[in-house]
Image (cartoon, rainbow, N blue to C red; front, side):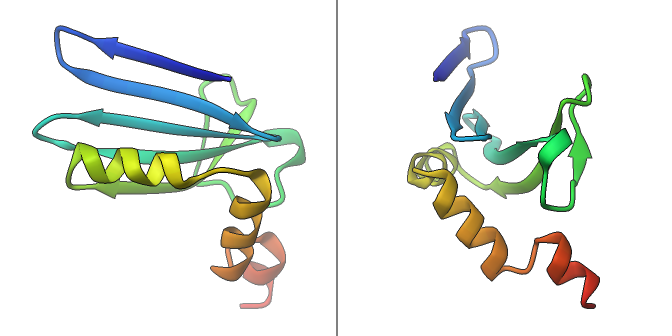
Length: 102
């Protein structure tokens, strides 16, 4: 499920896609760059949350800022599966078990 909202007044691009239990979000605006966020369901999230969604159903587990719209969109497009994200998160040590070892 992908959704695309373009706000013509501000030229803000906002897209969300579901990958298994996770949601990937990109927000970008020409001239300011963009950001990619990864969201996990709060009840079953196995990673540390950066921030919770307003409704508290989702935890943001990853966020990255990009200096250009193209970079942000490329990063968003490169996320292709839940397994890929789980692998990335465990390699980077973002999982709760890795953080408890510190």
